Image (cartoon, rainbow, N blue to C red; front, side, top):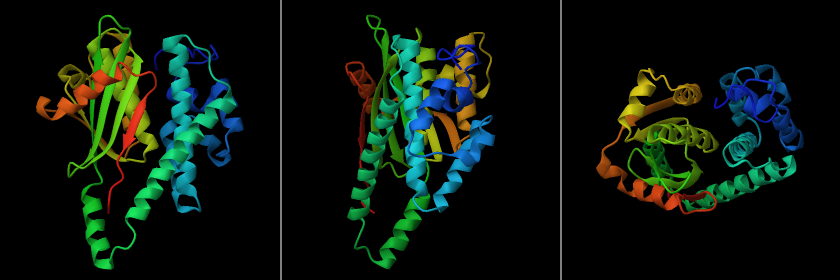
Length: 280
């Protein structure tokens, strides 16, 4: 990933598997987590296989909730790494990290419950029509733009998620440390968005970009910049986790709101997220 060796333990190469699953500091977090995945420890050398095994828990009682909480814990582990690497902050206590993950998960569950309440009372025929519509809307398009100011060391990231029928379902304003160039910042933004998207259980996604060079590097890697190569490699690894994940060049006209959102993100203190329950 970003460094040859993990900043937390200094002993192993910082791969996705090491960072999220096997680093000693990460293991401390998993030890205090309310959900354990002891049955898939033998898959920890390959994050994609590990996640695929986890996903099969959807069929069991409360399995979807367990997966959702797991995704939030992974996201908090990633944020802790970024705080240490880019801001020089010490890592939070494992209990605090898990508490943050649980809080975000409960907020997401509340949104889903609201959506379920709004959808009650539908007739069988209407539900059939909606089921067909949902099949058409399985793919989620995510507009992603980063904005940086020379006077700041930060980059603002705007993300807008829409269904294939252009129904907006989420907006994210994220703030990260700038890596120095527009190309690197956009690549880091895409990687961050892929990690966050795992939390939402969106397994068919399309990332819309305006950076032609980044799109070219994702399709035909050729950069001599080791940092960019690392980022694109990580993006390609994360791409494999999804059932469908593509990258496309977006017209500037459809990204205006997302661009404004990325500028807004430069002024925030903590990441901000908005979700829009859909009426089925």
